Length: 466
Image: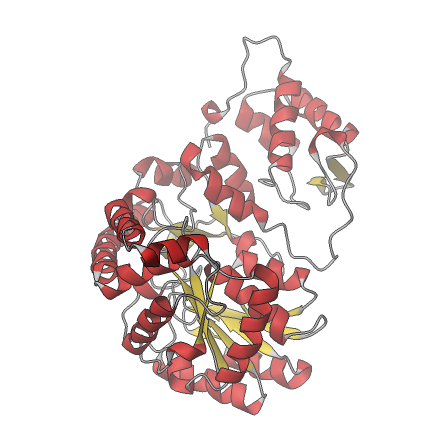
């Protein structure tokens, strides 16, 4: 990496060591450097920023004095687990088993407009259909007495009836037979997953999770007191032998998985793999939570565990943030009648209700076919972006660990992506290193890219030079 990417000012009144220390302190405060992260070696940092090793040592000494770093003999400098910017007293310690601070990814989503973001977790804003969203809301507000009811009163506990009817038809499109009475709307898919955790698990329960997998789900389950049991997920899907062994040894209560267009690998279960997973779940009396967040980017005929199982021991979760807009927090879950009653009661206790206005607007987008047509346009555009990104990755000497599908690519860049992410951030690029998707916080040379936002050849040139 060239030292010209450094943004340190040599013409200002602030010493270089102070500038460097302030930059690291800011990133620690923003959780862009995770607790436990190893900072670059003195030599690497000096080379990258074009300063002397003495300057780097002075900067690290300042961070040590502020309580933001700790020095480990013969290993280097690490962000302290309780580090906060400004020397403020640390909060109560997080559970020792927490894999990392998942707010890193969330903050990245909010800050993406300020920098290039090939690691973004959503479609770029310009790919979304603002006129469709505006039109849907105008139609809802033009419904006279019905609009007044939606705007000025609580909604129904299970969600807007028209939305649940539209969702039942949508579920049939992906092969899942589910009446409206077995559907509950939520404040996004994450809320649905949280309801399932709090309603159907107890602290200390063992839960199977994909590894790599969704960072926020790892942290959320850990914060709820669950024991994570990672199941390796690769080009051939989940490692069924490991899953079977974990079930026999630990008797987990639940398996949380993305069966279609898995994040971050892009893998989708084959019909045979889905049958094997259900067979293991049946034998181990295991509940499966199927997160189908990327449903609108996948073909309807892709095998869903909930379709094969008929919602007997599966709970289906999805939402609209990845295809409609992340600003409208509308998600839903489908489950057996008994589980739906329990989870609806819990929804009442946690949120009272969800937004009737937003849910009716989503229902209109579904009923009138606008969302389906929008999804088809996005899928075609994503196919083209994926082809370009694959060529750019090859030109940079990177290779895909799993076949490129869906929104995300899982690539091997040949160097430590945790350290690489820090250098790329200096150059204005927000990335998603493999560490963020590891249930055991294991680093390495893997990185997730978003095909839609990884189109700039400059980014791939930086990877090639790394």
